[in-house]
Image: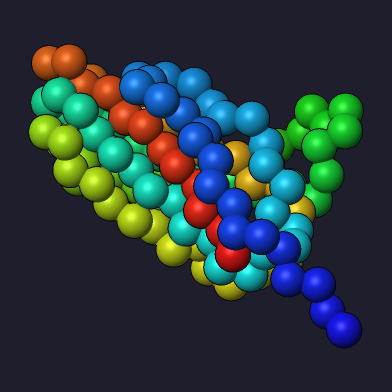
Length: 116
């Protein structure tokens, strides 16, 4: 009998222009969605979703899940929200990182992770 974990909701970033989230263990989840939410005017910025097998003392480069084209933060200017469904995979740990700083008049982003 397989074990189905409870749904997970984690706020990864709140009102940020730079930075990265803490790594979250998503190894027991198959459906993973990242919600990017904006506030203020956002004229620049990118969000990168990354993964690694483990995090204990890991200082190497994480793998980009978003591929060569990061998520464009200008899509969520003025209070918009965008969902990014993470491709199906056998992930260990996931984190998000603002690759290019968010810029604009009062522009900030928040990121929520949902898994089930």
